[in-house]
Length: 209
Image 1 (tube, rainbow, N blue to C red):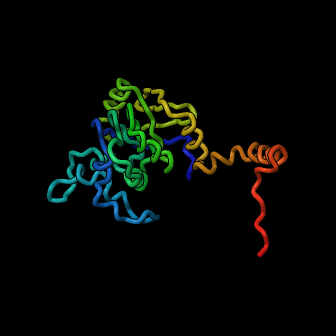
Image 2 (tube, one colour):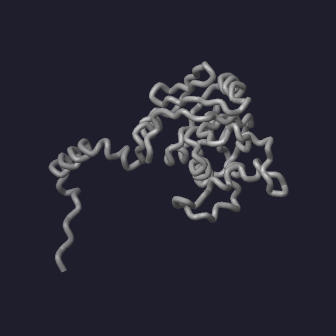
Image 3 (spheres, rainbow, N blue to C red):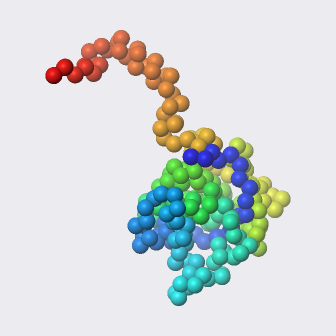
């Protein structure tokens, strides 16, 4: 997984509350395989960003050419609520999004985000509203600094929150196995000491046939 240390990119304002995983990726598109080139980005916000005839709705912020290529999304509270579908995160990541800023995120969504290298940054309600206002014109760039837990845009700086364990994982690009490997030496010492202290508890070798 690619480490997340600092990201500078266009930032798109989505001033909505309760954006759920079915809005992020409608369930009917979840049959796609998860592999490079599967293209979940084609379905990101599918029903919000399109009109009934299938054409793109120019009023949806991500359809604004000024927001093309934005890797940072800012929304109101409870982003990623709803079902546990990890494919909603796939759609964001496949579209190039590396950070979603909101006052709160769905718990399972946030965990899935970290597992896929996407930063779920928590910002206070008033700071989120200020940031949304700064980004509203479109085409505004922002910087997300995970080392400093800071967001910078249009001359303003905001401190965001992130679970400290998730911060370590993202900074290093680690998955759950990598997190466990940090303690490999300590685990080896414990196993060696336990073999001496409890020889009767050790797995016996299988008898030869």
